Length: 378
Image 1 (cartoon, rainbow, N blue to C red):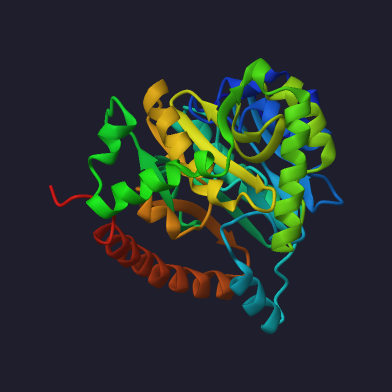
Image 2 (image 1 turned 180 degrees about the vertical axis):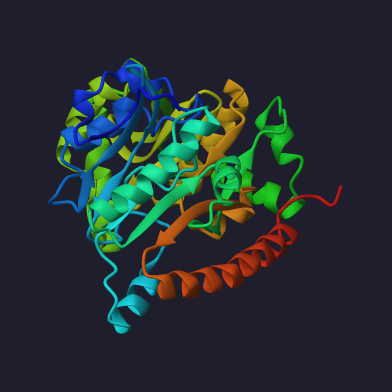
C-alpha cells in the first residue's frame, strides 16, 4: 500500500456515506449493506447496552475508501450463531480472561457473506493485520470472523494467527428449475407427497399465502411481523435482539431488500416468514405464527421461498441456523466458515487442536447427512 493509506475506526455508520461503504459489498449480500447495518445501530439493536459496540474498520488510499469491515467489540457471545461457549468456559476455568472479544460479523444474522469488504488482496491482508492490532489496543482477548465466504476463508487461513473453523447449515441451490414441480420431481416419492401435503396447509387452515415486498410490505405489515416475532421469542424463552424501533424504521430503510411470505386469515396476518434478498440470493431470518396455525411453518419458511427462487431466477436460499427438518424439504448440509485468533498462546493452541478435530467431524457429518437426503437415486 502507498504512504497515503490510512486505517480508520468508525463508531457510527451514520458518519460513513452509503456509497463509500456499499462499493465493497457483495452483490448477493443484503446484510453487509450500509442500510441494514446502520439500521441496527439507529434502532439500538447494537450498542454498549446490547454488548455489540461498533468499531467498523475503514481503509483509505489517497482519500478513497478501498476497504471496510463490520467490526464489534463484545463482552458476551450472544447473537453470533458460531458458538464458542465451550472455549469461554475453558478459558474461565483456566483463569484466563476471555472477554472482551472482537467480532467481524453481521449481528444476530447467521448468513454467509464477505467480512472484509474489498476486492484487493493487499488491502485484505492489511485489514487482517489491522484487526489483530485493534484486538490488542482494545485489550480484547480474541478475534472472530464469522460466517465468512469459503474463498475468503481460503485466502485468510494461511495467516499464522488464524484458525479456520467449519460448521454447517442447510441451504438450497437452484439447479435451473423451471417450475416447482420440476424441483419436486428430483425428490423421492414420499418426500414429494410430504411437500404437496404441506403446501395444502393454507387451504386446510382457511388462509391465503402472499409474498410481499417493496410497497406491498406496508408499515402495518411490518408491525404485524414484529408482533409475530415477539410471540416466537416468548415461546422459545429467547432474548429479543431486534428492537421495536427496527420494525418502525424498516419500511423506509429496507423496502428494497425485505421479502415476507405471509398467511392471512381474512385481513389478519396470522403467520409470516421474514426474508431478505439481494442479487441472486434469498435469506430466511424470522418466523412467527399465531396459535392454531403451526401447520403453515413449512410452507412459509421453505416451500414458498423455494418456489419464489424458481420463479424469480434466484440461485441460492439460506433458511437460517439449525433445523434438521430442513433436510427432508431438500435443503442440503453445507459447510459454513469462520476464522479465529486467541491472544493467549496456550488457549489458542488448545482451540486449534479442538477445531482440527471438530472440522473432521463436521465433514463426516455433512457426508452422512447428504447421503440421507431426500433425492431420487438418479
